[in-house]
Image 1: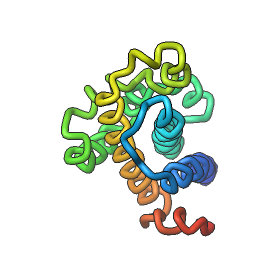
Image 2: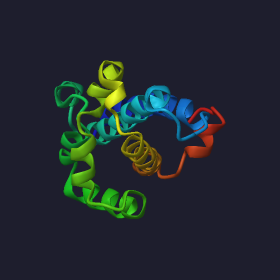
Image 3: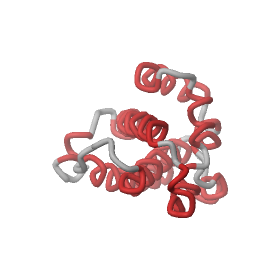
Image 4: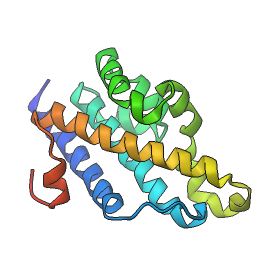
Length: 165
């Protein structure tokens, strides 16, 4: 692993932390999906960036990550098996289903939910809130895991306090 990869991965990680901070300061209230949708989209983007930071840390370049797009399942599948297994273990309680099935179910949400107004009336609020709540759990655990890989410590409090890492 080169310093270049570490520095690039930290840049992606810090960008994801900006989205996490936005979500972290928001109050989760089970309401109309049309209202919550921007928070969910930011949460998905945050997860995407943490996964991309892990891929870059593993030696993948930015072009590879960009080509992977916004699909969380593809990004997760691109991780080393060791990382996949460790993330699966820490997510087991939060997601309470197979991580691959869960990511497959929400795989296109970042793209589709940006245009929720097109078919927003057809969204099942209960399913939306369930996916949103699980994705929040995914986001916090990916932040923690990526932080440990990059810094050897949990930087969540530093992110919350907007301190430099």
